[in-house]
Image 1: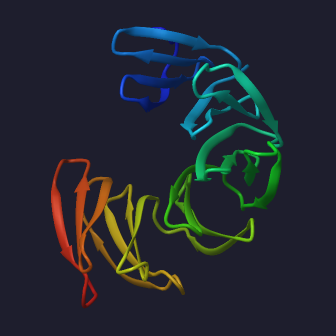
Image 2: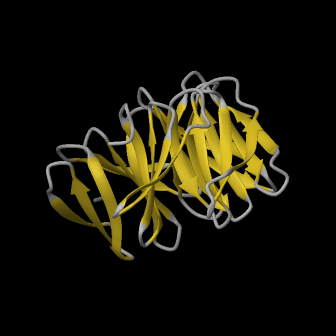
Length: 239
């Protein structure tokens, strides 16, 4: 118990090394044998940590994103640009990450120059979670029943899809990328055309949708918070 407040994320660095972040502002590096290092470089809660080939990367309530060497865990760079808590990170490719903040901005960052590449201002809520859909699209779910799909082309972010009726927590692309399937915290599974983002169908289950898996081109396996597995056939729409 090396953290003094709630843990916000845990990730695997390698087969025997793990990292955790905490509301106490620290990052713990540990193995099955015990603590390896406790990092205290942030001045506010650490909300998320991710890894790339080179770095352990953290985001914090101190408005910063910090890059640590993946082997020594020494601080290498601090990236500034957000004006409020940075809540979420996702790796886009080997050289690029994306961050979301309560300043209502999503930012694209270069891990080579350690500089901001572009910024997209979002509407009146803060980004809380990212789900990478494919090479060019990510979904961001927001507080209070708002979520969007963002497209990334030529290092520019755009927002072709916005949905405000349900709070989606899971999303996958099916049928060679033509179908977007989204599962909500309220227990619904919805189908959208992945090009026009037109809603095709929606079915209501019970309990938050925890996982979505494509079994075949026309079948989805759904797991909800009650531990119930449901299989849907979607080849002919609707569900």
